[in-house]
Amino acid sequence: MSLVQVSFIAIGVVGVLGVLGMIAIISGRTPKKLNWRKNVDKKALKVDKSKTSFLAPDEPTETEEANITDETEVDEEQQVEIDGSIKIEEKVIYEEISEEEAGITRRQFLTKALRVSFGAFVGIQAISWLGFFWPKVSGGFGSKVDAGKVEDLKKQIVQSDGSVIPAFIPEARAYVLPFDSSQVSGSQFSDGATIADGLVAIYQRCVHLGCRVPWCNSSQGFECPCHGSKYNLVGEYYAGPAPRNLDRFVVSVNAAGKFIIDTGSIIESPRASGLSVKYPQGLSCIALAPADE
Image (cartoon, rainbow, N blue to C red; front, side):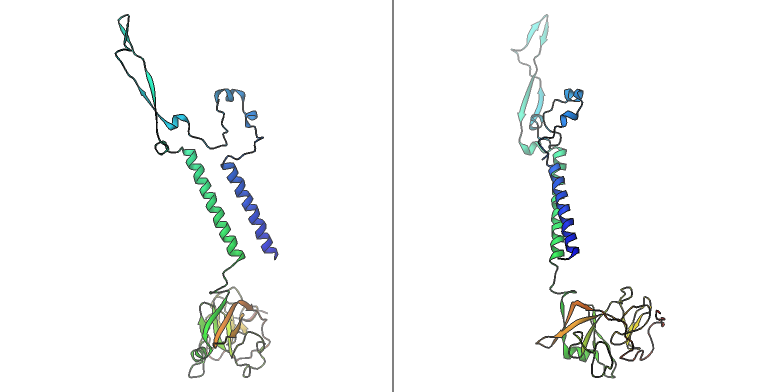
């Protein structure tokens, strides 16, 4: 297990403990030995005779469960004449109502809302951690991408006049180009897993600052419009601030004759001492940028 994974696990454990602590505080699960009344002024205790903990959520009181109505009933039998006046007795009648009619208090509503929010937060964090430790490995960039049949790619890439237009594979973010080891002399890519049945897959990202490098058909090479880095047909460095050649992917051909690009395996290579393929073969698409010394 790498140091990065251990760090993420430690951060996750601390986050879970923090969330559990906040949930315990909100739900009123405080230590039994906590006697908050000792820290309260005695005069305040005399005024507030409540026996419930202020940390616990409010429970509906009898007055909340009952609808108090003050009614004044005057009965003929209760009317007593005293010195020519009438004495009226008042009665308070309590009517019990259902929980649906009573509803909940504002504190109860806020407590439930906080609990739901923390529960959602924990769920989102758990999903993100699972996605980190078990990333998606099937389909898309980072996995093995089927670029199509080798014969179809070669027909698409090589033009009738002998020029080359690379096949761009969006799912792999790669350009597929021809590479004949017998015709390309002195290339550092002649051996290795980056060539399969005369084809290579070059990463579209410039190794300088990550811009996408477009193909220049007139010069038969790759030319970055951001800072002027240039590469020949097989991705070898020619000019500009780029520190090395264009990156390449590990490739293979399966039993069905399809060209497979392993986008999870990126191969880096230093600047070539000499170009194995002539560049430029025509006019450049951008102004020439001087190479770094």
